[in-house]
Length: 306
Image 1 (tube, rainbow, N blue to C red):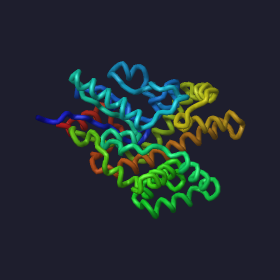
Image 2 (cartoon, rainbow, N blue to C red):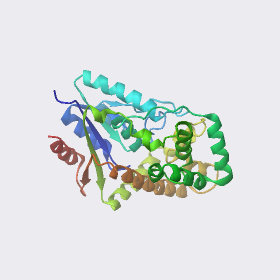
Image 3 (cartoon, rainbow, N blue to C red):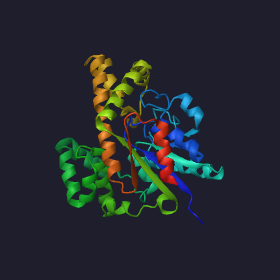
Image 4 (cartoon, one colour):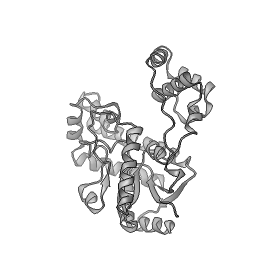
């Protein structure tokens, strides 16, 4: 019996995933499951560049705006919810089409989560104290000695992930990279296809700049002002546009400077996304040509599927 098929359409921010996904979904009888760690939050439509209502009417979308921005939502929550959607789609005879740029979210669906290791407050308190007194580079060097593979995957300033890796090692005696090899995800029992979108870097950056302008014209400033009146969760607060506009609201710099920072930080994010997806040997790259329409790109991907 042939395996059930699951498709991933991934790539950097502003590459055009949403439009292409809609055209592809229609061709393959699919519904779209968001694979974006920010678009899962509600009341953040503009700052997270959620698909427009007109786009969502064309094809059914899942896991968009389903969590309050004051709540925390992690990869385990996402995996649980996304797999539940997959089961419903298969029962309806629909294909799941995961669309987004959050590499970690894609990974935990395809590869699964490693066995859960509970947090240890004493270990975390000790590591947090070392972080405060000696800095993240000190902890990063500790990680590099015990788990060189994980150290290659994490930024030296990403103290949250470094502390977690050190905590897991302290509790289990095993490097977190070793535990991750024990994961089991959909890739083990399904026909998983991953298509990664890309385009000329200058075109991508132009798209980012234009999209930022559209966000401002659509009411980004007012949306950010409303959101900052809430006690945002740590993840929601990290959405590009929130902290940059907070600096404008507090008088640190001008609105033009806030816009420039959003564009710059979006470009940096796009680079990180491309770096992540290039490491995935399963990804089949689809380079979008200049002036090529979403319909044409979707048609190319459809041919690759058959």
